[in-house]
Image 1 (tube, rainbow over the protein chains, first blue to last red):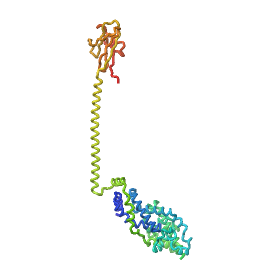
Image 2 (image 1 turned 90 degrees about the horizontal axis):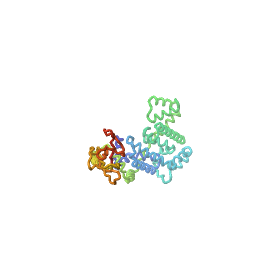
Image 3 (image 1 turned 30 degrees about the vertical axis):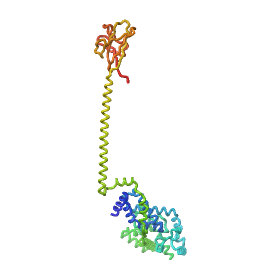
Length: 196
Length: 231
């Protein structure tokens, strides 16, 4: 039902009815923002990226295959934009080096949160509640391809097939990325537990 | 069962995709193997982080900011046309527009075909006129000069199929130079004719200068001339 309603909105938008596109934005804005936020861990970047994903979707809406799911397509755009943005800033390379065990507990406490360490000064508008978000902290320590996969699976609750579509990989590779991501998170989590 | 297989069972458990038998098998192994049990427990905790973590909502004014960015872009005409053609006629007026367009196309095609038919008719009529004129022109007599040499003749006539072998004054050759060269110019319609010269109104002589000959049925030969218009 939602699918066909999405397609109706897409067709109306293509006919020039921007109000239909407004409904699409309303329907998926939180999902895209949350995805971008979990990946970037920065509100401003997340909003910019989620906005850009909608604008790109609008501009290329005629390319959208209406046999597919709209939200998977929007996730694909948002995920690709976010990953490209993070690659440009070199965040992933830094995160790979800044593993929990390399920092040590004292440094971890002194540096407050992972989010505070990683992003440029202008992007450090993270509120107190978000700083306490342990999930963000854990996610910051695994490579982008695994992080994207586990977020899509366990936070956005996409099926493996949908994850494969969003990431543009095979079903088996999507599963491998989710499993490896979880395995890495588990290792980091266990190390954290041992340090306590 | 290998350790790797038990790990896969943990993933199946996390994905809710495990059979009761496999679950029992995993539980038994965890009971025997504390490391595997700890692994399973920490994995479940990680997944619980995801499931219990808050979802962040887009900030207020997000939709307006997106719409402000897209409303500046007009929909390209090509895109509108493509979508209009693809559309499945949700609105009644679309039928009217489509039928109107189809009708205009049909009338245009019929009109075009009718106009082409009239044009062909006119062309055909002009061709017929030209053919008639050409045929008339083909039948127009052409001046044909016959020359015969006989220094001793007192009179020379020409007769043939063009005048039913009649001998008359209008077919008498002239000997203008009195030098034995007799000549006459006749207006003949295009065609092939047999002819002979009649010397002194008694001797039928074949024109030696003729291009071709044929038997005359009296033991002599008729001369042949072809009268044709030069193109």
